[in-house]
Length: 288
Length: 276
Image (cartoon, rainbow over the protein chains, first blue to last red):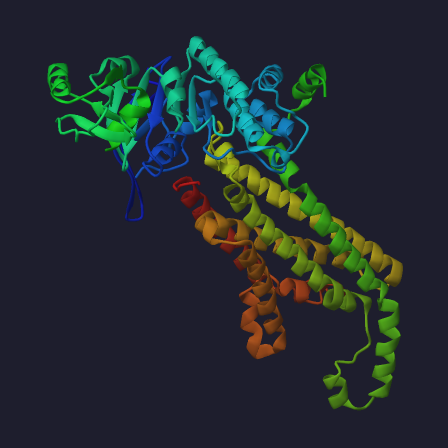
């Protein structure tokens, strides 16, 4: 079973394109990162997955059910953290959590475990909480029922480093349990740390789906050179994202290593460093 | 609350979480409206003892002058007529405003405050969620009207014991309940149909507009058609003094069908739309 299967998803808002021909999936026990700049269509895709948006075309299936038509049958096994922390403002934190627990038919023990782990006060109204604590509430609501599929839209926004660490531990626990997780974030080191695969979206279209391991072995390199006198113009093909800082020039290179060495040999350099590109560089490379 | 107590509470609770959610989210406005309307009803009826002798004096003054009697609408003031014209009409109006606003809030409230992302991603279909909201609407409108109706009855008994038919009063109370329910369900259905294009102000205007139309219907025989264009006509009919014969049952039937049909279309539309 594919817990989350998005196929040729199109969503138009009137004449405006939200997303077009989006196809990807999240396999069992897999953590998939979903990255793209603001307005790329991440939240639209996620909202279609959780059944809030009706696809204009294409299909979205969660746990073998059509997400829009019959999604409620599958949502017993779905945990969702929305981009903006969502909750019932009229209820206290505890009442919000009890509502979700009752809906899913899970014991209140889990509220105790998760709220203790993330240090969330239960007696206040959510409106009285900081952004970080509101986010904690959303995370606990999503993880309460130990769901098979977890969809996280910018889950770490507002979390301090200690809570973020605890959040990662929880996500790793969920993965060990066998949950499938889709996580959208602008914090690329988080994605790099957590994910098995990454889906990159731009202008409403998927432009790349990469295994994280493959990404690491891809030929995209970050090259940093230092020069004493001149600042040569880097003309080699395959070079992108050139940045100059004092006598230091940094650029990404995607091409044959032999050509790079030959080119570097032709210019006057005093120091050199060649590293594998991280997700951040890959991301910028895709968006150029 | 300790974990053991929570577990006990969870075991004991047999109500649907959706039912409990809507109850918790909407009880405060019910209390506020019930208290305000009941207080105004009681206060208005308390004034009956001052108004009645004044009216009797006017009747005496204009005896044999039919033009003046018509101009000042003087007639012997009966408590039932006084209740309908002074207390019952604003009871119906305020209760309908409450129902109309609640109908709007139940649907658009979650979309406005962002909680729709929690509510509609739970393991309940949109139809189930709307059903629980409708039940909450019906219960709250019923509680409001029963409370106000009973306060009105107590006030009537205090200041007019033996001067009116309790059965007619209960009939009037029932028809006010029906008309406010009709307005509330209509507003709820409009919210389902047009979602965020419907605002709190519009919901109040729906109730107010229908009330004003009913007042046009009072302007004479040539304006009688207005009685069919609003469910409020029944609230302005002198049922307590004149009996059930003055009730416009056709209007009630029309205004039962309109909200129900709108509701059916509303639910159909709501099931097939984006909810953010």
